[in-house]
Image 1 (tube, rainbow over the protein chains, first blue to last red):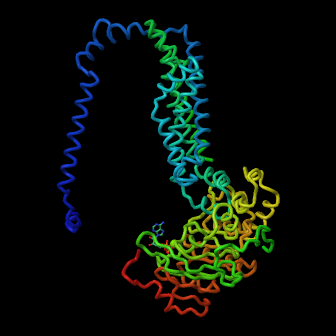
Image 2 (cartoon, rainbow over the protein chains, first blue to last red):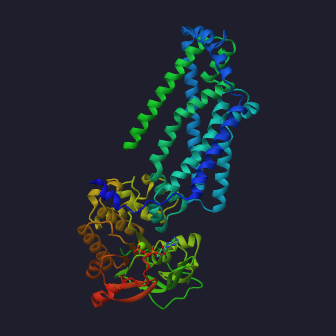
Image 3 (cartoon, each protein chain N blue to C red):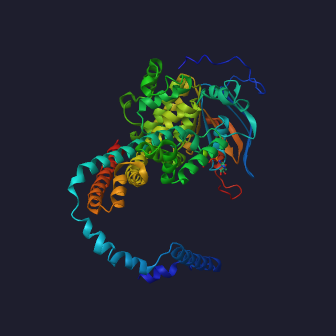
Length: 274
Length: 273
Ligand SMILES: Nc1ncnc2c1ncn2[C@@H]1O[C@H](COP(=O)(O)OP(=O)(O)OP(=O)(O)O)[C@@H](O)[C@H]1O
Ligand SMILES: [Mg+2]
């Protein structure tokens, strides 16, 4: 009988009062945050219903005038999608290279000193916390509107993100091979090249490829504020209510994202087997 | 392995306290505490050329700490470690790096770079002697190093595994590759912290026999930390027993009694940590 074994269990430790009250307090705070957010963002059910069902709402106006997709802009949209992909690819490679370059300074266990490490991580944190969109707006000011501004914005933001992920990968790696080379007399750069990098290589390529599709989506968003590519086309067609064109763009966009996801999965699997 | 590196000798390391010994590794008065935990309480130990010395002791008795302090992977609080006459505790930076090359370290957890071939790993032993440019990629390693690495692999009987990735070697093979790397390093001392703890009995025998061989035939000083008294007695020339951060005994392996070895593992203060 199972009850006999269960009766042998030592008594379950009681949840302490402090803990129980802690949970209740946390719940209260959560509800408070939700209520505040609801009102602060101007959320309202009537506005939602209006947006969906009014005469110039989603169902009676926007959707009917979005079909059928405009075939005439197909070639143009594919070209724009390729530009967006180029932005994503270039920025991910540049960001990856920069992240590799700061890696010897940004990982605590191999950094030459505590101060260098803290400083590097601070810079990465700053880069990470400035949204790509804001960076693009800043680059637009100094460099003018062009896809290259998008590349720079995505590169720097990506450096902030990948720089941290790369550094964490190194911090979690098994340091025994690194120590062994150190003791053998190898210098900092030598250990980095021959023990650290081979140890994290597959993790880093995985992280980079994993971000390819998220980078692509970001590049689309940046396009909408003048960063070029398919995002810019969508924005300008929306401005002039050319909904049928927008439909074409979005179909191309969705297909592109799905293809890129597939591609990055396949690449990661290939590299993982190595 | 007779050819020694030229960078040896001149400066009689300042501040050292040479004990008038020509042993390649002389540890004296080594102390180390982690917070209130006094792990090494003044350890003296001498590793001679051509001998296999084994340190025995219970978990937490300070064996690994002693080893790490001896090569400054951990900084000791006090004491000296003379490696080929140079006091590692008095050196820093490039000088420390150069002096430390005399010692090769073998860890319990395999310390090879898993993604690289056995051969590349053996070549890594020479990184400390290579210039930055020639060390950038394994393809640019100098021919002299590759030759030496091949000799090392032959020495440990693994020439046929040269191109296998280190991550796919068996535990025993990996430790033998680590020994080969010590050759390429031209080390005069090998320090091995539980090199056979992860190995099956046969591989453990093989690796220890190899280490003894390396000591006896190539004249290196080999220090191992073991948790298998029987292996220690069979293979080593000398045994040092450690107990709570102190040397309990230090005598030729054949003169040790099983009683004094057993005493090392008795619970002293009921504190296993
Ligand atoms: N980096 C560290 N920080 C704090 N305490 C440490 C550190 N390294 C070792 N110790 C402590 O020092 C003591 C001795 O550890 P050490 O690893 O030298 O023992 P050991 O003899 O090698 O044991 P084992 O047989 O388990 O390997 C232990 O109590 C351990 O907790
Ligand atoms: Mg240990």
